[in-house]
Image 1 (spheres, helix red, strand yellow):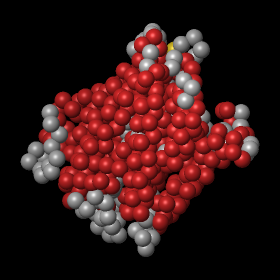
Image 2 (tube, rainbow, N blue to C red):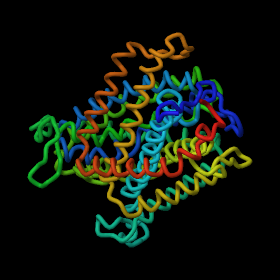
Image 3 (cartoon, one colour):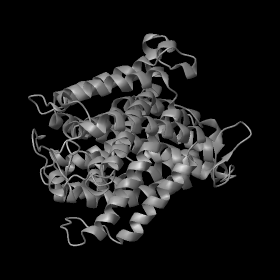
Image 4 (spheres, rainbow, N blue to C red):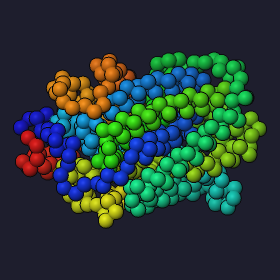
Length: 471
């Protein structure tokens, strides 16, 4: 059997055997999960990183990243309704493209989800640390990583532990709490726009594109440009892929998954445009670039200190929704990989409440180490590389299935599928090339190591490899 011939049958991907996750979620839960995952560190913290790399043209960076993600979201919606499996892009790739591609995608998703959780935890700490220091005098050295002169980022580690505990309690309980916190987050961003927009000054938009369009290295050695910023703040848009990991737990996946995926993308795009415009218009970008709490900083700079405190406090409350969504998603991907034999079978065990407790605990421990010691922008850029690979894979899966099985049942059909799929693939490839060179190198090293693990361990242990599944 060749490297690309090991494929999981469509019926097994759509209806997995064995211990199943309980279907407890409906479309409002999925929309809240998507908005909770998408609206988070990207707009609350990474807008400063993006402005540092593109200047006021970060608005254009948001638009480009959003358009590419919209194409990918449509591909996800079609594949998720064809194969409502918990493994998201990994499961689609296993069925359509073969085992080795599925392994690379799964390995990349491990990178994506682990680093997203770490990034958001660091972003949350950026808002929580000043409040904690001011109220209790807790030493900043224990609330910042080494890149900021500290020792360890304890708040980041703490919030990961809290969210992991919520997920262990149960899926529906976590989703309900998530929905409440999402409303807090939207109210916070609405408050920011309402207060900052009256300070909009067109002079702050000049020069609009100080670092050019394509990625280039500035004199200080940082890679800048509209596309360099888009490749990092692309992080601000994805999160809808976490919805597809909840397919097995969705009551009516054919109806609810497209609503959750597309609905959350539309809502978040509108929110981002308003917040980004208010931010870059209210203050020169050089004054909040690379700040770990840019929105609160902007409010303080325009003399709205009390509102800044409210926004910072609300961010502390609401940012964990992103952690919840991505820890949720990663545990489900690990679960399916364990079912397929790629990970030890005991990791697929579910608790009495239907939660993959062991995987959640292992994931939380791993990402806590990253969040405690690694710089924010380095984490976000590397997380994006894994996501871009997953988006490309899902778009390719959609196009291949349109040719391989044109008459297959598709509860949701992507309009202009060829154009949308090509747009997602080309756009994601361009964004990948716009990532920092160091990030690209680390990504290939990660996947090179992953292929070694596959050939030494995964290939022989997979159920298909042992003749226990598929063909």
